[in-house]
Length: 401
Image (cartoon, rainbow, N blue to C red; front, side):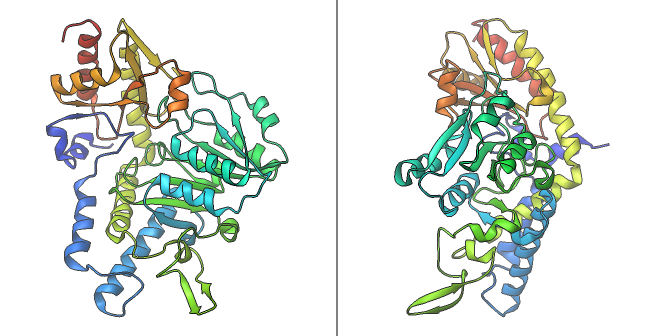
């Protein structure tokens, strides 16, 4: 049994706020902060560049973090783990490094975050890469028969979000990956909203490339992320930045790159961030990802049922919680979502997100031109958080503020 009250003690800020903005960034527990602090105090040095004891220890800890992340997502080899700044950075590396040519087709979905839309749009405009979209309904569901028609022999990449940051809907990655592979295409996944919240295994999902951020579900620091690339595809990806730490030899006429992952990590990396991420995935693993998934789903059940019982609300996304992460978007009729977020903060220090959530095309399709209010859960939330939130949303909806 997990002692969730003890878990909450690792997040002191919860004594001051009701934090329901984990889809934007999760809180970071004290043991992870301690690991980062230890690096900066005890062995602050660059990695893979020095023979002295501090550099050796920093390098060992950095490599250990990579191995921990590989195990956490079921990667076969740590070399498949490329440290990035965040999900956005990783998706840009994938889009710009895959050597796509005019006439190649990239298939996206209609619910993508801007980070999994804009880089491919740039390729469309600059290099005549064709874009096609798998349309979803307002619940975020796919018609797989139509998907099979869109994913054809011209498709080079299918790039999809595992979980919607607006609707919380979970994409059937396995089924879409099979369609993509049957067509000879690579599968790239934006896993920003799922890693750390539910079990994510790259082999079970069938993904070739996957990007996620350390500061979301994994409970790590900001400024660190991961681009996973399946080993057999590493040579298909060009580095998008070159310089220190990426080369084996340089002459005036050219250079020889190191092998992966070094060739993709130019310059001094976010060493403290990577070490913190390694500590964070170990922290999540000790709790148990299945325990976290069930905890968040239980809280989500209470939240969804409570919102549906409140008059004057519009609730977006799937109602089947087996198809949903702990992300809940809604609007109070007649009140701007930003005003709702401000009122909740002022009433009871309830932190939620408001706006378009970096997914303007999807939010427009929902008929919410000003965006939505979004409450999102983390493993550190409890029933009292949800009850306080529901009570205050009811007050706002009933005009009792």
